[in-house]
Image (cartoon, rainbow, N blue to C red):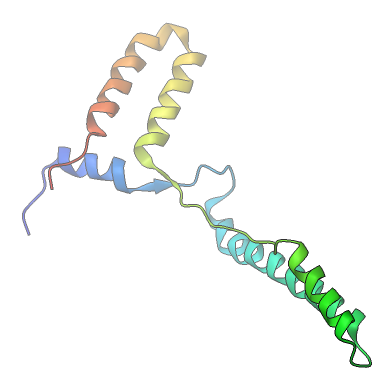
Length: 125
């Protein structure tokens, strides 16, 4: 394995390191991801159970078909996990916002933003 220069390490860090930009505490994801997966599954199970309970009783082919139609009529609830944003994009966004808020520092911030853009180019692997 070859050694990487500090500049190359910084570029890779900007590209590969990720930060939570959702606006919540990063530690809360440990609980919230599980919770967010749990709610739609629970709702889907409950809905199927309610539909099947309405069919409970004597065997009736029409009632079975009606229950199946009701189950297929609505798409099941779901939840997807999205990955965090690369560090380079977070830094660039922060600098742009800072330039808007501090007009006197806009030139200095523009120089820093250009430096971040140069570092975000793909590394030579």
